Length: 105
Image (cartoon, rainbow, N blue to C red; front, side, top):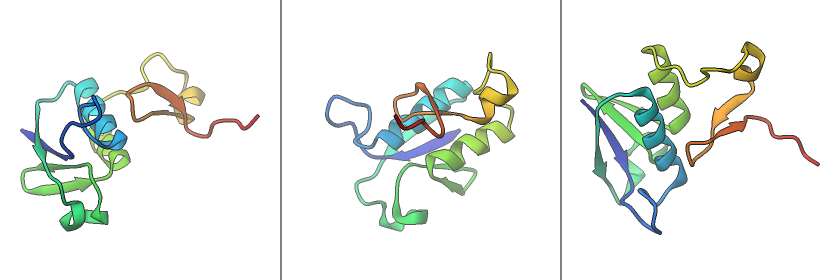
């Protein structure tokens, strides 16, 4: 079981941090079982930030690292995209696909 170390719900969102919400969406999209553990002081976490996941005693910190960890275990977040589109895509903090390097107008 994966434990998501996250901030508690706030502002009508499932977590006070959009990056924690992003991690929740990644875990849901990957179809893995997970449970939240709510923390209020992230200073003991790697990078002194949340989110992080705990798996078999190992801590994976940062939502981008969580995505890489899930992809290394078979999660596919770029279904339906060409290889080129996949290279420039990411999931924004609200679980929507967004360009990694948005164009400036």
